[in-house]
Amino acid sequence: MILASSSPIALLLGIAAAAAYTVPAAFASRLGETGARLALWLAWALHGAMLAAGMLQNAPRFGFAPALSVTAWLVLTVYAIERELFPKLRTRWVLAALGALTVLLALVFPGQPLHVSASAWLPLHLALGISAYGLFGAAVVHAALMTRAEKRLRLAEDTQSGMPLLTLERLTFRFVTAGFVLLTATLIAGVLFSEALYGRAWRWDHKAVFSVLSWLTFAALLLGRRRFGWRGRSAVRVLYAGAVLLLLAYVGSRFALEVVLGRAP
Image (cartoon, rainbow, N blue to C red; front, side, top):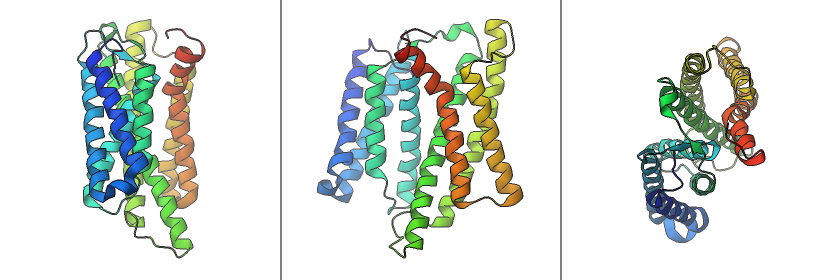
């Protein structure tokens, strides 16, 4: 989440993490099951060390790419845990490629200096927000696995490629529920943060609009699931829509400011 571009340690760790992610992403079949698994664990550890090195710098930075990097690391953390419980889970190369991409993006676009002293609510707001990103990211991955499992089931293909379908569905909505709780807390902390920093409770900018729209989308998904039993492709489409809106809320707005417009927010 926070990465100082001037830190040689973070830079070296980032390059090593990206290289390590490339191994299971590109050469999983040659490495074998154990080799690819160990390579992904090593990449995950280097990725986490890079993030920690960035957070320990005197001048931490934040932006769209570091936010994506932490989100990918959190999703990979969930995968690493579930991989121990469900050895047949097969999404390694996709997640490894995602990890490599987000690490490289964070090195190229480290973001702007983060002034944590601006408001006591800012660290809490950022921590809640990035945790919500990670949970919704995990929900999207599980939804994709669920869609693939349903397709295999319809085609009478081998479905022994990951978790049981009902387990995938249950975990997907658990991640959505947890993410929704944290997103709600993020918005509340954002209101308090804006009031302390700008003297008003809310700023209706692009980030606020997309954040509220994503919150409403996830709320509709959970309500539809509870009241009308939404499931399958219809529920997944709503989840994807909410995830896209949430991605546009922070990552999209910061990308436009940092890369397209080339100025600090």
